[in-house]
Length: 271
Image (cartoon, rainbow, N blue to C red; front, side):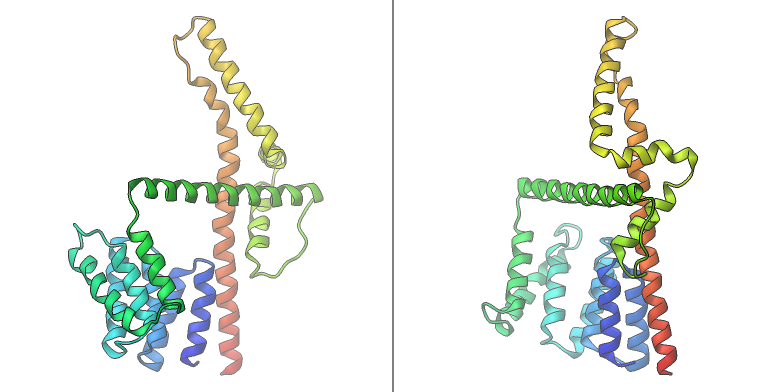
C-alpha cells in the first residue's frame, strides 16, 4: 500500500472511534514505507483521542518525530498545538509552554483565513475558557449524548414496531446500532425493556409520577420521615438505557471489524 492508502484507512477508522486500529495501521505503514507526516499526525491523533496521560505522551512523541523531519508541516503543527493547549500547566509545564512557540510558527506558515488558522483560533478559544464556560461545555456534551441516545432509542422503537430491521451495509453505523439493540433486547424476559424503549416518553413520565407518589405515601404513612425509595422505579429505565448504550458500543466494534475485513480483502486481492 501507499502512504495515501494507509492514511485513507486511518481516516475511516478514526471516524468510527477505532483509535487502537488507527495506531496499529500507522505503525504498520511507518514500518513498511518509512516516515510520513500524515501517518505521524494520525498516530498522534489516535493517541490523543484516548484522553489519557500515557496516550498524550505517546501523541507528543509522534508529533515530535514527524516535526523533526517536516518542521513546517501544518497538520502536525496544529495537531501538536491542540495537544499542548489541553495540557495541564501544573502537571505538564513543558508541554503547555510549547504552545506559544507552536502558535508563533503556525502564524508564519498559515495566513489569516486559512483552514489551519481557523483551527488555531478554535483551539485557542477552547484553551481560554473560564470555569463557567467549562461547565456550559460539559453540560452541552451531556445534552448531546442524551440527544444521541434518544435518537437511537427512537430508531430502535421504529424497528420494534416493524418487527425487525431491514438488511443494511455492515459498515452502516446507525443500522448496526439498531441491530445490536434488537439483539440485546430480544427474549421474553426483556419484554418490559422493549416496552419502555417503544414508549420512552410515556415510560419516563409514568416512572416520575410513581416515584413521587411512592415517596409521598411512605412519608404520609409514617414509615419514614423522608423517602427516596420511590426513585427505585427508575431502575428498569436505567437498565433499558444501559442496553442501548451497550448496543452502540457493540455496533461500533462490529463496524470497525467490518472495515478491517474489507481492508484485508482489498490487500489480499491487490497482492
